[in-house]
Image (cartoon, rainbow, N blue to C red):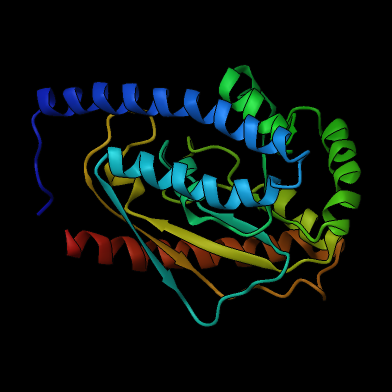
Length: 255
């Protein structure tokens, strides 16, 4: 049975979490800017992987969340398009806490309305796209492909596009899969289990507990074609629906 917490306790934790996280993000803006500008951008990948991992895991610890990482099969170290399910506000810190190597995050343009995400995103060379303007989004991505290939970078994309969707796994958008074809990259699927229970979609209240990240073997996309892209997307989404049943049931039993 899940541990029960009083509303007053959770709201007190919310105040502490928000205050501590906000303070940490402000300090991180200066620290990251100093490290990247001080090295003329040479430390960018190191900062994203290592400082990002420190930042993500620190925020999770403040919230009382322990992150377990389960590698299914052999790990993959080459350039790839990483994807995951997205159903909670804490997903961002889980993604950072993983410390994915040489990664850039593809995020919605509106995130830049937050000063922290604007400064950090720009200085760490993240990719912001306007999903409503597909033509401009494609232009931005194609412009980024050359740099991604040249520096052997990976990408992270949440194919659901938003954490607010019906069901455990929402509809998948084409972006991540089209990028994998364009770049000639495999897709590395990750499943975040337990996040929805600890921090529901429309809430900032975070319950202490555990989340588990299942990292699956890469999916070869070398044989994929645009003509059959919808079929490939459906196949991958069906994998996530299967995992949702397996992993969330295991999480519920563990609680």
